[in-house]
Amino acid sequence: MSPTTRKYGLIAIKVLLTLAFAAAGIAKLAGVAMMVQIFDAIGLGQWFRYATGLIEVAGAILLWVNGRQFIGAGLLLCTMIGALLAHIFALGLASAPPAVVLGVLAAVVVLAYRQQSPLAESHR
Image (cartoon, rainbow, N blue to C red):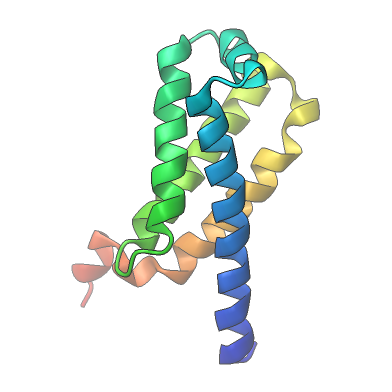
């Protein structure tokens, strides 16, 4: 893959993740009825909806902050792992594919910025 393709492909993935997570996070924070129902079904309380919304918005923002992309993508990846677990144990697998796709895209960004990891510092 050429460096130009890699650069613009990564930007496209970050734009998609930003749009998806900013929209989902804002919907959670705004108390959109569907989000309230989903978090009722999960059974951890509405505080968890607010926490998830904040993490999603923060992760989307951090994708664009120099030196913090690894952290932002890591937050989003962890959120999608949690979403997948929620689908497995509470919501049903029929609505899980978006969480899987967004999780894979977040993992791509994590790998692209892995040099920002604190663990990468110890290997230099």
